[in-house]
Image (cartoon, rainbow, N blue to C red; front, top):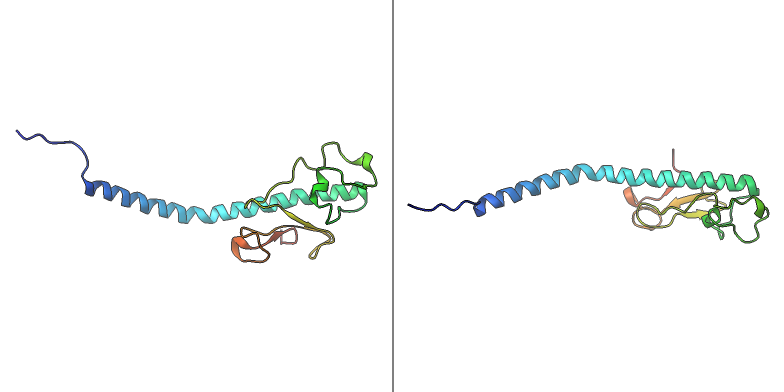
Length: 142
């Protein structure tokens, strides 16, 4: 009697690998737009949080931080602040968030597009761009 070895043939394994590759491609193509949208929404939420902290800072100190002081003025009292006793012990926000692409948010006062600008340079980290490389700022439509 012949002994039969149990197992898969090379053709069967190749068919399974091809099917898994096709399924992976379909999932990746369908999920990618949602990931881009999530990154955009995270940036919008971070910018809104920084905006609120800047408004609270202005309310208590009668001016926004200068561009040189930057948004770091929201976590640590800057030098020469007028009302140091009004500055919260823990700052106006607990930490400055990093944009979804691993870069710092940028701040300008006075701003080019509004009273102050808080923005991210997008995925490419350079001014301008389209799609996920586009700049996202507090001047965007809400």
